[in-house]
Image (cartoon, rainbow, N blue to C red):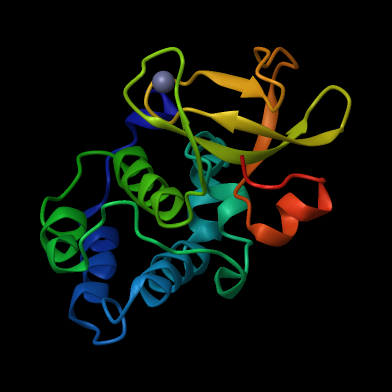
Length: 182
Ligand SMILES: [Zn+2]
């Protein structure tokens, strides 16, 4: 069995959906973000002992560590009224599916759009991302398309630096890298 096929145990799911009934969870985007992060963090050792790649492949490793107060949370189309059903409604078959659902949502909550259309799929706005290139350890800001996976450098050339760890950005991180919003 591949690690992403590990079934989601019912007791873990029941523990997760407790969040749905806590009044803080849906108060606003920042509270929602914190509720999900705290839940994953409190189960991190359990998930890592199953397979630590699950956090990495769902891009949860970096996003769990940000201080949400420092980030824009515009929600990217997430409606908090719908989340009880979307996030907590259907029991995913695998642990990986649950982590993917959580990871995508956390990233959606902190998207920082660049106001430039993706030149590849022409269907989505590119967003700023901070990457740490694995080979060189160099950090830089790139533009990324969440829909088709296309990424480019700030000068418009295609991103070709290979594998990288990605981090969300905020105004301060952009400024520190000399970027003023396009
Ligand atoms: Zn695209």
